[in-house]
Amino acid sequence: MEIIAEKTIHTRLKQVFEKQKERSLLLRSELLKERISRLKKLETWISLNRERIKKAVNADFRKPLLEVDTSEIYPVLTEIRHTLKHLEEWARPKKIDATLSYIGTYSEIRYEPKGVCLIIAPWNFPFNLCIGPLVSCIAAGNSAIIKPSEMTPSTAQLLKEMMAEIFEEDIVTVMEGGVDVSQALLEFPFDHIFFTGSPAVGKVVMKAASNNLTSITLELGGKSPTIIDASANLRDAAKRIAFGKFFNNGQTCIAPDYILIEESVKQKFIDYLKKEIQLLFGEGHVIDENSPHYARIVNNKHFHRVNDLLKDAVEKGAKPEILGTINDGTNFIAPVILSNVSANAKILEEEIFGPVLPVLTFKNKEEVIRFINNRPKPLALYIFSQKRAFREYILQNTSAGGVCINECVLQFTHPNLPFGGVNNSGIGKSHGYYGFITFSNEKAILRQKNGWAAPYLLHPPYTERMKKIVDVLLKWF
Image (tube, rainbow, N blue to C red; front, top):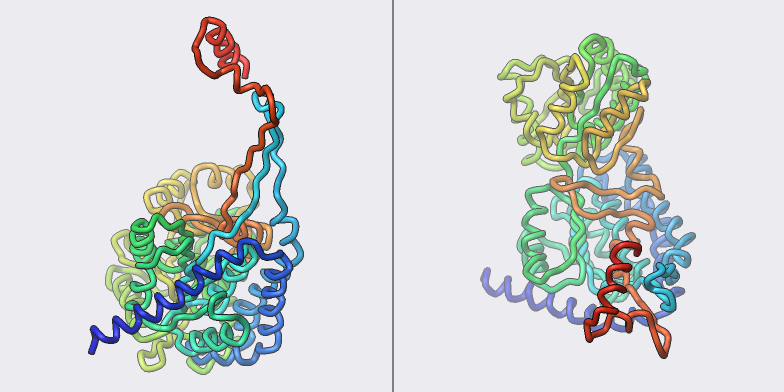
């Protein structure tokens, strides 16, 4: 029966892939207004179906309804509207100036669709991180097969219904299923793969893409550090970090993963952080399972993974500065702050992706640099400091996909900033213009005039006269 099922899956995927492959050839020559029309249909559907989206995401991990609006729907609508405003400008051929060596030629860059694209979306922002890349994919003139996460089945089902209501199957199709469907999809020769998920799975996707030499974008994660020196406004820092860390129950790839704070202000900061957590999620009281302002861990497997990291840290000497309800039955873990975390605790080695925040201390900036650079490059890095020299020192001596100064997580929603990682935290950039470029082939075109042209000077035979010309070329051009 399993063999039959596998054959059925593969047959279905092949059918859709071949349809899109054929349609993608037609998409190359269609007018830009067709792409604009598709984006407007997407915008309209989302605006008219807000309640359906909120209900689906909430059903998957009790994400607060207003939080679905702000973190799933609003960023996508912003991406669509920004793209609609600028698409004609982005898609216009770009004239390239000729250098002295190329006088007489005309050059330009044209942006052509890559073709059939695969978007593999994660579960932590199941709507946003699926539709966001799709906006760029459509804007660049491609077709797409979307594989949503099986861990958020309600949202996956909604996405399938949504695409069927808006697009023809040979433009956009959703393929539900588990790992078997993902593995089957990765066997096909897509023109581009956009994957959002963990570094471990990212390596699998990258290896599979190499079999067909498919271009890829990997939006991964890692351990994003947050650095606070003694000059920082600690109250502001606590407010912004409490939101950035515990928003979506810490299940955010750019959430602060751990704090590095100057030793002299550690306790004062922790006191502020405790108050902010209570204000944000508990209406003045310690958060409990009934809080309507706080999401849940997505499933029991991830609940145990996070809880095991917490237990390991405490067993190795970590001190819980705040520790609320933990309930296996509801996948509930209240915000946790840990101090005095042992260097060999697993929580300092693995991406937490949950509501546990280790607070470590430093005495000088050199310690900070050593600690960060001894680990893989993060997707995000946050600096809270009023000292420009300190901020610049951190910026110049570390590498990260993106940085916020005196703020956190806000960089993701900025329409004019590229979003993406570096090495272990990702490959390629997305959002706005950068997303359009990701899903486009930048075709270089050079046109030469008729008749005599400068390159003739370098054609054989290689005479003494040519040697003199080459000497001048190498020295002055």
